[in-house]
Each structure stands twice: as C-alpha cells, then as structure tokens.
Figure 1 (cartoon, rainbow, N blue to C red):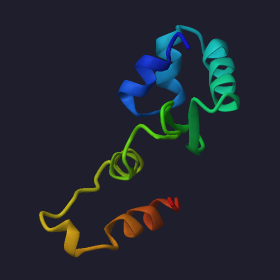
Figure 2: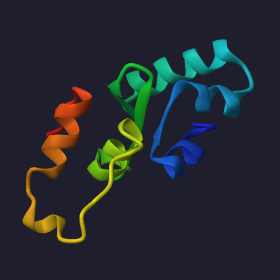
Figure 3: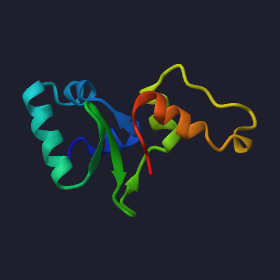
Figure 4: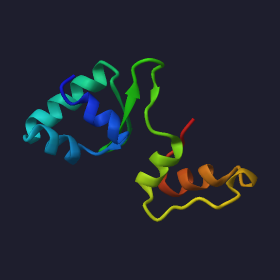
Length: 99
C-alpha cells in the first residue's frame, strides 16, 4: 500500500499517473493488477481507475469527479438538482454507465 495514500487523494487517475508515482511502467502495471485484485481500486474503463475508500468499499471520487475526468469539457449547471439526467447524459456521451 505504498502508493495508496497518493492515489486516494487523487480519487480518479490513469495508469500514467501511477507510473509517475512508481517511476517504472512495469511496476505501475504490477501495482495496478495487485490493487485491483485486493479491491483497493476499481477499474472504470480502459486506463481509468478510481480509489476505493477502505472503510466502506465505495469509490473515493464522486460520480461527478469521475464524469469530469472522462469528459473534461463537462460542467454542472447552477440548478443541477432540477436536471436529474445530467449524470446520465455525461455517462451516455462517454459510453460509461455508472450505478
């Protein structure tokens, strides 16, 4: 769990970010596989992962942060509570369906 604190602080991250933490591409791949097996992180899509809160096994990043990471040009409307399909629209645009 040498990099878990840094990854959970980021919330949502890519394999390249793990590679910069470890300093080696092979180590980053091995660490990612190990953390996936131990359920410290979850795979959102290819090359996109989210850290898992160890206390309650829920993602450390919110759905909106994950959607923002997938679609950087996404934004929230001031009255987004009135638009319940905003998250659905972001997920459909990117091809990801979160639960």
